[in-house]
Amino acid sequence: MKKKILVTGASRGLGFNITRKYLENGETVFAGARDITSEKLQALKENYPDTLIPITLDVTDTASVNAAAKSIGSYTEHLDVIINNAAIHSPTSFEILERADIDDCMATYDVNSLGPLRVVKACLSLIRNGDGAKIINISSESGSIGACGRDREFDYCMTKAALNMGTKLLANYLNKDKILVLAVHPGWMRTDMGGPNAHLDPYEAACQLVELFEKRNTLDGPIFIDNEGEEYPW
Image (cartoon, rainbow, N blue to C red; front, side):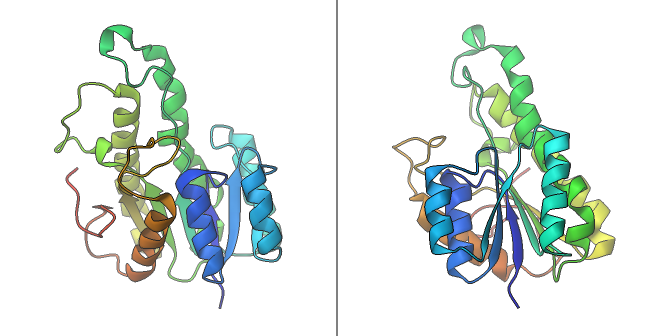
């Protein structure tokens, strides 16, 4: 039976490539994006007219998230996988503290930390009806306090650390429902966010991650992991 999968931030970067890979695997993907008319999504829709369902979704807007969940519910009674991928940096993220705009951090928190909670809350009944359901929060090594070596990117690092805590709370809460919840460091990729000097091609990274998500079927084991499935320090 085809899986039903929701991917946020699906119009570009890792989210787009995860969407592409799941479609290639024969799954049905609800591709959440603020702009579902993007050229890349529309081209993908032409190749997968029946199994790609673009969904307008702004993870910072509760009304938008609730409307997206209602739209998904008009197609299916369940979701098997939610991948919370949407994320941003603030405009001054890479500046030293003296030049960083701390007020810009709030928008990053809204997307990176609170957005996944909005999505899970709105889709809770759908994911509870899923078969071996999984919630995957795309985190980052930059969210690790134990491994931190940076001296800037306050907004991004702090929001990913907050996302990791949210992941742990969700894992505790949804354990009774047998829903697997993970925070995953996907690796450094050549995307708009990762830049041209990153190590990984985003499609190859997506293939590796999708395989990893498929293999992990037990609630036992680490919650914060890297793209090899190995535990990453909180």
